[in-house]
Length: 320
Ligand code: UDP
Ligand code: MG
Image (tube, rainbow, N blue to C red; front, side, top):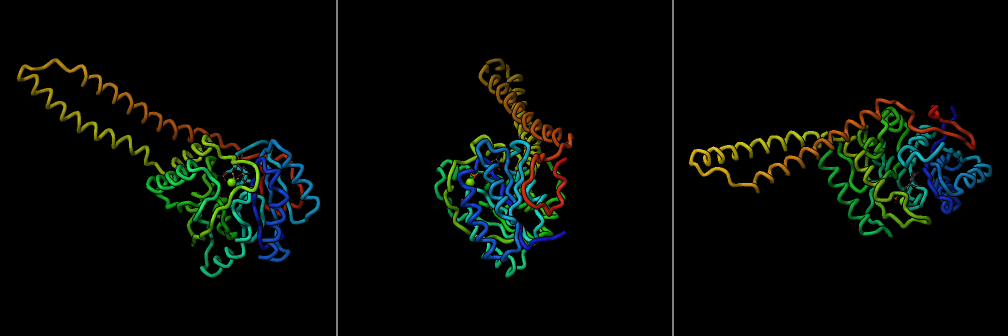
C-alpha cells in the first residue's frame, strides 16, 4: 500500500460555504508540512446543502483529495470514524471543516510531536472566539464533570483537533464501540500524548451543528462510555437512605412507646415523594446503560458509504 506521510481527515455537515477556503488552507498547510506527500479525506455526513457536489468538483481537480459520501447523516463522531478508517497516512490530522481550528498549526504540531516523541498531539483551547456564553459555560462544566466521573483521564477543553501517529490510529481503530466519544477513546489507548495550546477562532461560515440536544447526547455517550459511576451512585444513595431510615425507625419507636404517635402527614408525603423520585432517577440511569448495551449487541456497521470520489488507499471495510 502506498502510504502518504500525512492524512488530513475532515468530517463535513452542511459546510458548503467553507469547503473552498478549507481546501485551500488545508492544502497549503499540508504542503508546508510534508510537501506533496499528503492526502485529504473529506467526509460528507449526509449534508442537506450542496456540500457533496462541491466535494466532487474539488476531488476532480485535486489528486490529493478523497471525498467520501455517507449514505445519510450519521453524526460527527461516526463521520470522523469513516474518514479514519479510510485514510492511509503515516500521520493523521483530525480537524473540523469550519476552520475554527487553524490548519496552519499543523507545522508546529508536527514539531511538538517530534520534539516530545509523542504519538498524539491534542490541541487544547486556550480561548474560544465567537461562541455564546452558554456554550462556553456548558462546555466548561461538562469537561469538569467528565473529569470527576471517568476513570480515563480525558484532557480538559479538548476537541477532536489532533495529530496522531499511525500506530496510535491503529490502536484507536481496534475499539469497536457504537457509542463513540472519540477524544475519550483516543485518551484511553494511552501511548505518549501531549497537549498543544491554541486559540479557537470563530466559524468561517454557517452555524454550529452541535445544538443543545446533540451536546447532551455526546455528554451521555462520554459519561456512559467511560464511567460506571452513575451506576455506583445508586448503591451510595441506597446506603445513605438506609442510614436515614434507621434513624427514622428509632424516632418512630420512641413515639410509639411514649404514646405520642400518629400526626405527620407531612413527613409521610416527604418520604413517599423523595423515594419515588430517587427510584425513578436511578431506574432511568440503569436504562441508559441498558439501552447502550442493546445498541452494542445489535452489532450494526458504524456507518454506510454510498459514493467515493478520488483515489482510496486505506483499508476500510466501507461499512458493508
Ligand atoms: N459534523 C458532522 N456531522 C454532524 C455534525 C457536525 O460531520 O452531524 C461536523 C461539522 O461539519 C464540523 C464538525 O463536525 O466539521 C464540528 O461541528 P460544529 O463545528 O458544528 O461543532 P462546534 O464547533 O460548534 O462544536
Ligand atoms: Mg465548529
